[in-house]
Length: 306
Image 1: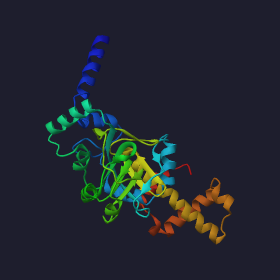
Image 2: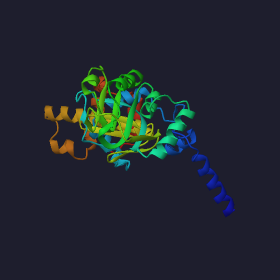
Image 3: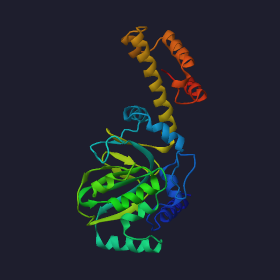
Image 4: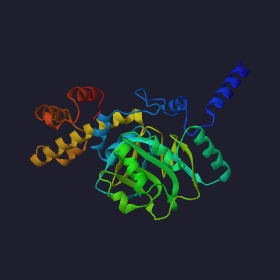
């Protein structure tokens, strides 16, 4: 029995190790085991657009608070240079990993790309795979000089496909040209006029590191002026409903403080049953304030500990 288990383990890892630029669908499911919804042709989780829209309305702090409670403490990265600081965006991560050039490995990757029917230079391969509402997220190991992953030509192609933007732990060039792409935004480590040199693409749709954050394909990317946070696909719904509930609590609390109904200590502390009842009545009297359906809210509040 023990020998059989060892044999099966070796066979499993042998199958996973078949050379390809991107993971198999089975390996993608291994990376995202808790996602139970729709997946794309590559096996990447496809969080519904409706949840993406709702997530965009939340603050980084609201999202971070929920992730922290779920023990996801390494999902945020700041310190970006933004193309447009007033244009936040949200989307599904399509990841790419770059490494310093090693000719022997790069030659084999280039050959493999041709065998798979990929066209052009390898830094265009992830772009060819993008779909609407994707975000191209690349680990370029922080390289800026000779580390610019796109210019305005590739930027136009990216926006035409995704209608969002990019997050690069690397550089970008053609800032002036990119800034003319209406609706496009870029979070990068720096701007430089040089081209991409001495770098190679080693994987697409693989887990990557972006600064202090770990990013898995299909994570939902929320990019705002404070930085970028990466939400595991299976937690997006919980993040959204919890964040929206916290927002409602805050609106109610502010209204009560302005009216002098309760003191700051009462609102900031653990709510009494009286305050909870007042909050429920406020929700009934202000249905237009609800960012979610009342059914969603009622279901969520069944397990809320306040």
